[in-house]
Length: 214
Ligand code: ADP
Image 1 (cartoon, rainbow, N blue to C red):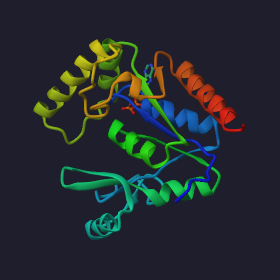
Image 2 (cartoon, protein in one colour; image 1 turned 120 degrees about the horizontal axis):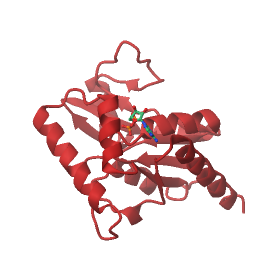
Image 3 (cartoon, rainbow, N blue to C red; image 1 turned 45 degrees about the vertical axis):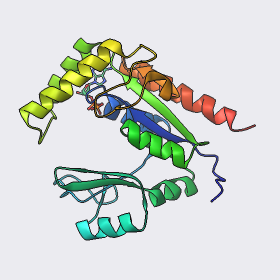
Image 4 (cartoon, helix red, strand yellow; image 1 turned 60 degrees about the horizontal axis):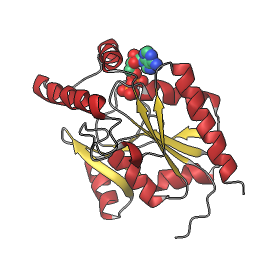
């Protein structure tokens, strides 16, 4: 299918706790063209979660049917539940004139870029230091459902990545950025100060839209 969209598709990747959620919400508040790309899951909705707002909640059977139909850009399984990004959600948002946006792992960002190469802008969000990341992780305390061992392994990988991340040959190992290196992303934004990081992303979007006007 030929791609006639001029919209941007924006992916934000970075280690857990780096501020993706915070920055992403502020970008969407200030740029009303940018809209959350809602993903699908088979896990139970939490009390505050709404169908079609936080996720598309599917039964296991529905999800597997959609898998057979090749309806997903990318999918994975965690703790017995399926998670996936539906192609139709991307089309729906773009047809409505929005720039779909999601925070996603590198493999997810890559799948989106492979599907919409001319539209996709991949952004890597990094914390300014290991200490800042530790503080944010402690502040957030959101590491739910994980065993201590898994958590330790995950944090160790983030630490290694933080030490080497500017090395052009270094391949990231933590789950969110696994298999990628710095040059695989279109832009790198350091989340030192939230206001500054949000402004940098808004500037990136402005420039990328201008490029597509010609
Ligand atoms: P992620 O979505 O990447 O896992 P969050 O957006 O949940 O990260 O942020 C983790 C924590 O760090 C939150 O408590 C958030 O308020 C805080 N935080 C985010 N950006 C900054 C920043 N630039 N400086 C200080 N704290 C921040």
